[in-house]
Image 1: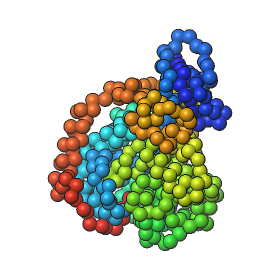
Image 2 (image 1 turned 120 degrees about the horizontal axis):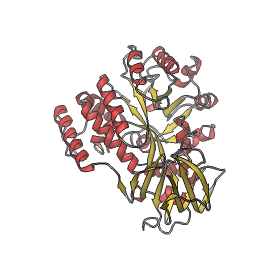
Image 3 (image 1 turned 180 degrees about the vertical axis):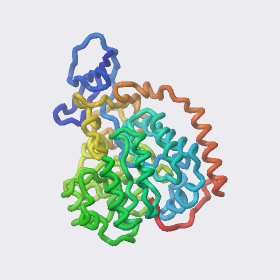
Image 4 (image 1 turned 90 degrees about the vertical axis):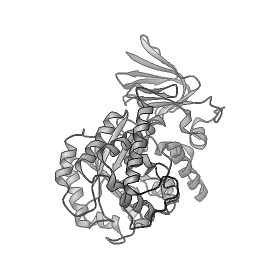
Length: 434
């Protein structure tokens, strides 16, 4: 069976296709077979996309999904308070069931708001069962997910556990979250990168000035000097990194993921979107953590766009949609499969309601998506051509039961940690942990 998505406003993010004021998308065997102003076909299921924007699904390149149960609790937290709260106080009380529910509801929430591909930066790996629960949740939720295994920050070898996890996942379904270079020695960082290369994994590493510099003030340069930078390396945040180190990242082909809401609220500094782009690095965007920030890419794009326009006005709305789609796919090493509406790619796309009064009338779809878009516009989500959300409702998901289970999980963890859930908790600041 083929599917024809007919008559929508097409935002392809593929320069060869461009944008179509009205166009058709033909899906065969889960992939895009044709895209044009009009596609003639017979024996196809027709999806009426009139009054809708048709665009590739969003790609979130860095989210700590296991924290979903405590959404919003850290709206006022500093970075150090976040470390004390989520890692020092709550995380030790997480059981595998709690990890599973956080990852499952978090991934479903991302999917519902249009995120078809997501990198889950998992650092609740206190025991192997936690990692297994997180992976199972990603399997049980629709959508493409990359499990980024982030080990604890001790100097002990993690090779056995990483290899065990690697055996459970497809080649493009796992990355390794480095423990260094800011929280461990450079020797530990080098060992982790060597392990990732042995297993064919991309690596993701948190680096920003707010974390401090226990391994020296030039972590990127130190990694470069040890031969640890290449096009499989993604830096998370990058705030405050010196210009010459940004140039080193660009020369090595590294990618960067920007989390503007968290970076601004927690005091990391200005999001480095424009500075990375000026150096030749096309950044991607990410939510980071839901206790402190909202979980949708519309808000993420809008914050990054507004800040950059306020700083120097140098970027356009289209840049930020690219960061949230095709550049995100490239950051995850998945740009041959997803990130744009291109013939041959997986049919991962969303339909946005262009007749919703918050955006109607849509004159410029790109400008509308960035300046006024929100999760309520997401009418439909398709993964590899299969609908997982239609007419504003998720398919085959028992949300009431999952909500009940997540609330029970939150209550149990909070009680075990002695944490109130009335908004009064102010965790003491501690050394930063990511």
